[in-house]
Amino acid sequence: MNERLYLGVEIGGTKTQVVLGNFNADIIDGRRFQVDKAAGAAGIRNQIARALEEFQNKHRISAVGIGFGGPVDWRNGRTALSHHIEGWSDFDLAGWMHDLARVPVRVDNDANTAALAAACLGVGRNSNPVFYVTLGSGVGGGLVVDQEIYHGAIPGEAEIGHVRLDKAGTIVEKRCSGWAVDKRIRDEIEAEPDSPLAKLVRESPGGEARHLPEAIEFGDKVAARVLDETAEDLAFALSHVTHLAHPEMIVLGGGLSFVGDLLREAVQQHLPRFLMDAFKPGPAVRIAAFGEDVVTVGALLLAKAANSK
Image 1 (cartoon, one colour):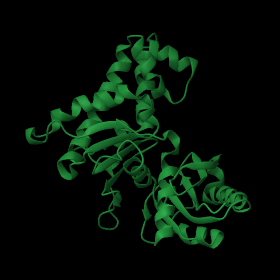
Image 2 (cartoon, one colour; image 1 turned 60 degrees about the horizontal axis):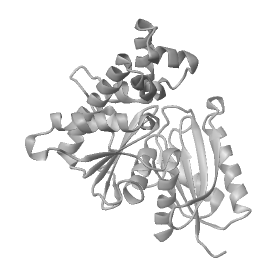
Image 3 (cartoon, rainbow, N blue to C red; image 1 turned 90 degrees about the vertical axis):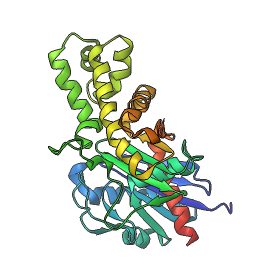
């Protein structure tokens, strides 16, 4: 009954998650909501407020951590904007939550928050530093050194999604995000309508990248090429991370990472090609643990840290 409990919140472009967790960042209970874009940020805040009230009616919450899907000033918890949802521009998220919960609140970018979970409790817990890249509707990154998020000078963050792949301005997000790979698959199967990949997409459209492993099992050359070229682009971007920050481990997260070991192995294979000889073979590449809960687990760690200040 005296166990210290925390609230972890993920605010994304498609879903909102609110979880109750303990001192070890184990999730005890949780609520998941689909985001109504028409309702904007106010709709998301209403979802969070309802979940908070429900949990506070049953438990004493010691602190709140929030992983926000967009640029945020981690020092004061004020959001800059969301690229997906209206209503988050220059919003005092930490202040709003503190007024509701009356406990310490800490806010950070969702990729940083996920990176913290990966480095402290996930596959990177025995590695240092750890670089995390989330491959979702966009591409984000987070660097954790000595189990602390490295932020850099304001407003800098580990924005690997905006690293350029060429002088023309093609950024990683335009080639390696979930939506970019989905679009490429749709374009490819228009030219190859009889391929196994095209058949799988017709049977279950949306989130086309999830069909890549099965299509590759069927010997689909289109699927194999899409996956390999995506991994090559990502490995090229991660070579810059390696040369600059020298992580001991790189962790792949986000929806595209659910493709699994086929993606991980391809990135691991391509990465040394882009590294100077002294740094080969480069960091280990792993798939993130915790699945869709990785941000909320990290948010629980933020809450724990906020409570210790």
